[in-house]
Image (tube, rainbow, N blue to C red):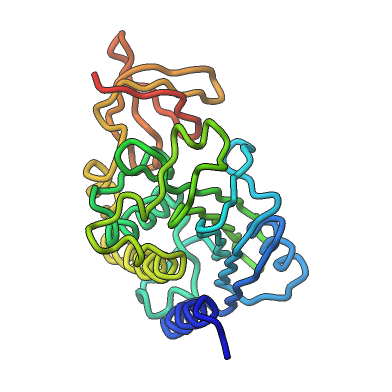
Length: 283
């Protein structure tokens, strides 16, 4: 007879499969990295797109800017491989037959994680540009996106790695993780701590991801309209390290390319398309 964890996993995968979006779905005990594994499968042409890979444990998980990703029990770790490019105008029903729009993709993923966690959390999850997710000032989830250019005819593929602390015990965590991270079960709504499982979070994420992609197809301006209410940094004084140096100033939000807009002390507007937020504080 299957154990309870096996049944929960099976029910979660069955529900995701029933949505009809992913063509390849797998949940494994351990890999070096779900992103690396999916990229190797793409090179070997052993999976169909879109693809989903979930792992109970990663031995070499990597976060943004090469940081190691601590992968304890209770952490949901998965990756999606999705064609990117111009979307089909026919809507969600054919999303898995078309390319997902690459514009603002990192920010949309962050919003999908935040909206997924809002189903469980007692405090609204916020997105720290471009796609880290915070609850009550502590990080609960992160995203790493690798792009494989033109790996399939006429389209590139985004491999989107996501880690969410669902039911994590931080007593054995590195000191910096203990100081800055939180777990969903610790800030769940009353009576929902046990519901904040990796299986439930995964199912909720897929639902929210498909809903956001549908909104983006039907209303291309949706993310720009939605971002101010989900952004952790808007109106904050921030310091961002980017390719041209370090920018400091008041965060004004994002533009249509997903670049963060920073107004410095001289009242000049700086656009940062890619970078790392080193610090932030209220004005």
